[in-house]
Amino acid sequence: MRLFLLLLISILASAAEYPKVFSSAGDEIYENMAQYEKIKNLDIYQDRPELLESFCEDAEKSIKMGFALDKAEEDPEVGIDKQAIKAYAKELRRLSNQNENIKSQVRRDMQVLLEAKDVKHLRVFETAGFQMSPEMLKVFSEDDIAQKKSAKDKKFQDKINLLNQKNKKQEAQVEKLAQSKSVQSVKIETEVKEKTPEPKVIEVKETVILKEEPIVEEKVAPPKELSEIEKYQESLALLKEELYALRESGEQDKTACLNDITAINYWMIKVLENEKDACAFVDAIKQMKSYDKSAAESCGRSSMRYVEWHGRIKPYVGKRLFQAEALCSR
Image (cartoon, rainbow, N blue to C red; front, side, top):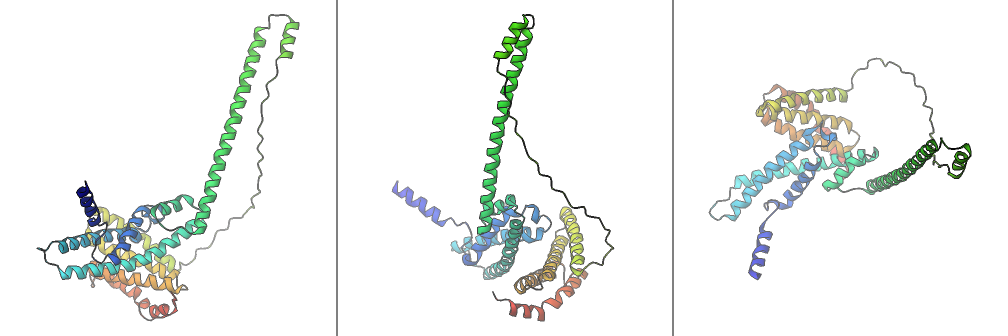
């Protein structure tokens, strides 16, 4: 029995949830990936699959690389592939940088849900293991109290309805009795009516306060010229439609290229939105650089699409990035 317990403890100790190689860097990436898997299908991420879905796919491939290296280290007959180790370390650094930016975006998304008091979606983040702020916990508490009050009010109303049904049943019995006695004398009929108590129906009155809505005259706004952000938002919508069509067609090479270009467009919008927030501005530019490097391989440096988008981000990756990094105080 003791030998069995020792063997069981040994097996459990050797079973790793994540790869041992570079675990100090990889564990956090894979733990966050598990959280993102639980929220990536929420409505708020359906229009930007490149944020979580592509990261989870890359992390899944990376974890397989890590387990393969673990197996090679444990087998004395298999030589360690130094190039594979370098490639794994490089991929972990890329995923780590991307993960930091995703965590910042997820925190902003949770804040938006908090301001909208969207308890349903916030509870999904809580179940996925994301840390809840005191304000979020307060919203949960208020929602629990409201649900309990609603259930209590329903229970009370059900009792009132049941009592009303009983009173109506008594009324029906009295009416039936009066009809059966109609052939008797007027005196007996009168005595029966006097002795039979009239049922009381509890009336629940509900006061409805009507709020007068102000009358707003609709004015037709003249057509306006799109801002730079709005132009990129329209471009992003078109790229997404094209990307979904490619994914269904199964053209992997073109899909990989278009996925990188779509991500660059998405992060360009974030760059323009966060020009006054130095840290967010830096994060968005770094994301663009990362996807630009990936697009150089997936699209090819001579591709017209790569040349176009590489030219779009070029003004941001030099002096402006340096200045923003200097202003970011984190």
